[in-house]
Amino acid sequence: MDVHLNSPIIYGLEVAYTFDAGPNAVLIARNREVAAELLQRLLFYFPPNSNTDLSSYLLGDKSILKDIGVEEKKDIEALPTPPELQAAQKYRGDVSYFICTRPGSGPTVLTDENHALLDPATGLPK
Image 1: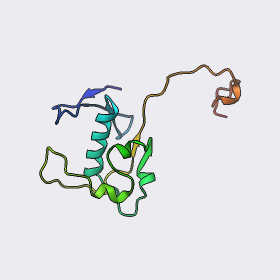
Image 2: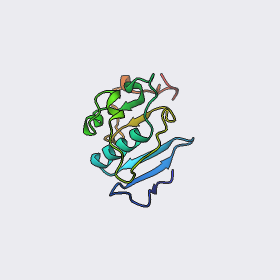
Image 3: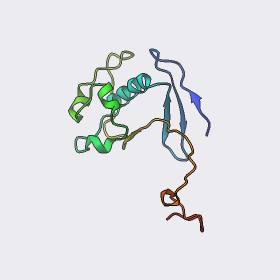
Image 4: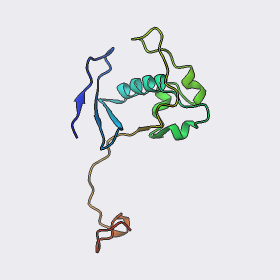
């Protein structure tokens, strides 16, 4: 997986990006503040369809929504236009969903085989 720096830097918003094995973009922010600014812009430009529930549009760590003042789907419509633009076209429904997450603690050695996802004898999923 190659990771690239997004350039040019827009209003101090610096993120890295890459793509998974398919067409899905993976955006990596340096800290929560930058991640919140990025999410605010993404939700502004790519709001959910009117029949989409907010809980299925943003998966993972939903606490970041409070950082940008979004508690309900209607709050997305009230997001301010990003400072780099005076007017902007929105692409409602063009994104299926966003996943927000943070790095975990890394690999862990399991001492209890009951917590393993793979069968130790076969190597296949349980």
